[in-house]
Length: 353
Image (tube, rainbow, N blue to C red):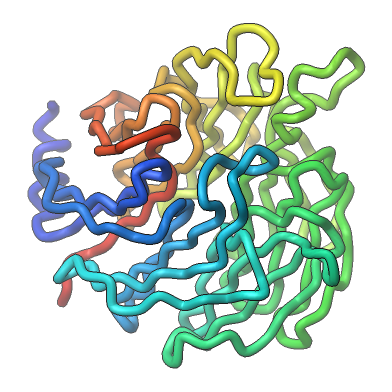
């Protein structure tokens, strides 16, 4: 490890990385300075994503299914779990029923609102549930006109929200102030989402993995760049393999996780090869680096200073810690699990005070 990397780690003393174990029904906490495992918290099965609320010092965890994953599960769940990351204890379980399969989480810290994507039911389309972060109660719902909104992202001003819809051929655009769907941007089955710091660009990974091994013609693998003002795709950042998670760092880098599979995926995850983390410059669209990761990259986050990246790989149940100055792998953290699949959602939690 370089001297700079050692100094960076020292500055993170007291910070924590939280990681979901999807099959294990747990959230694991790692020391961000030493990478040591601090503890494990049991949550309702089967957890997926995490979101940290710094104002209330709560870590929100969504539970999407009782087992399995999208389109191959043992029943859809309806819980959100609020965890105190300092004491590592569950403080509340919020049941969103009759809504089900909560997955994507996005926080409007200024308004104290948590947005949670939910799948369609027999009597309603897929949508986004609005939760008051203080009272922990649902206070609204926004339809997204698609059966499976999965990831959800909001712009920094808290005005516009974007839902990735997997097999639906568009990204939903919602007006968060009015609580209505206002547009659909043509994207061939979207996965992860990220919004630029100024809100002018939305980055949507795709196509959906269900399209990845279909006969030609198939959509170009990569990240669609959406101009938020005109709500149109204006560029594609190509990748060699299907792209799932996308993340923008505080330093302005676009991080993309690519899934590499040997043979057809069929109805499951398929035989996974080591994944790939690709690093793009959003200003130029150029790929500046790529490195091998754990198998089946599913979630990416970064430290608040933009110096370190964290990539959760669900099939290998690992988290790769990457130095974004040298693009070198600093560590590979094994995430405890009791079943399949493994590591999923991530959240970086700065120390209290």
